[in-house]
Amino acid sequence: DIQMTQSPSSLSASVGDRVTITCRASQSITYSLNWYQQKPGKAPKLLIYSASTLQGGVPSRFSGSGSGTDFTLTISSLQPEDSATYYCQQSYSTPLFGGGTKVEIK
Amino acid sequence: QVQLQESGPGLVNPSGTLSLTCAVSGGSIISDNWWSWVRQPPGKGLQWIGESYHSGSTNYKPSLKSRATISVDRSKNQFSLRLSSVTAADTAVYYCAKKSHDSGETPGAFDIWGQGTMVTVSS
Image (cartoon, rainbow over all chains, first blue to last red; front, top):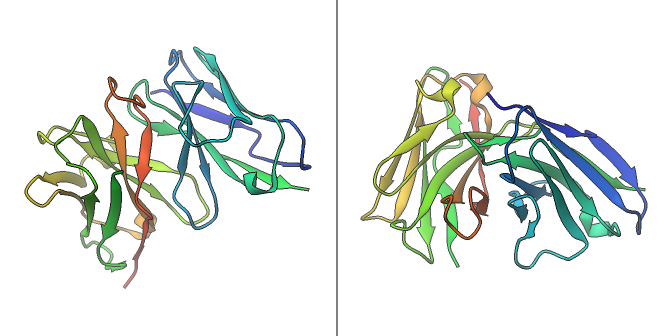
């Protein structure tokens, strides 16, 4: 089975900072990697699919990159409303989510 | 725009069966999508349970396959989850979600979610 490892599990950054979250698959999943944002008490929201394609309506400060086993979600300039937990999900085989990264604003 | 809405009991007895329904509005369930269930135990991450295509074809998380049944009701434009022999470990927020087919606009991604419904397993 493919395992998904996200890091870090949490981070704290200031408004305007560049934030990077990493997701690693235990084997190649080509470009089959999606990113979600979840705020407390809310359903997850799709941010990026196929590793790097921005979902409609998502601010351009969010970007995704990577292929094979290593993927990155980047927030180029952190905003207060970006405080949330972020999950990666592989869609190469049976859907599996990473453990999540909680992003807090300093 | 497709919208999803979960419904069902918020409390289930241990060893009983959890039953939830997801109503699909703004679009047809007969479309090139997988209709899915995802759950989230309190304070924990997301766990995919399984999915059904409108044809009745299904896929499940292996560890839940023996207890989970997902079905589609095309006449009511809704799909359902049944999870048998529940324990406290099944206590979670349950989400229904639409997952695009691999050939769809957002291949393999869960692009539409319901608001979620909390189910507690307790006597």
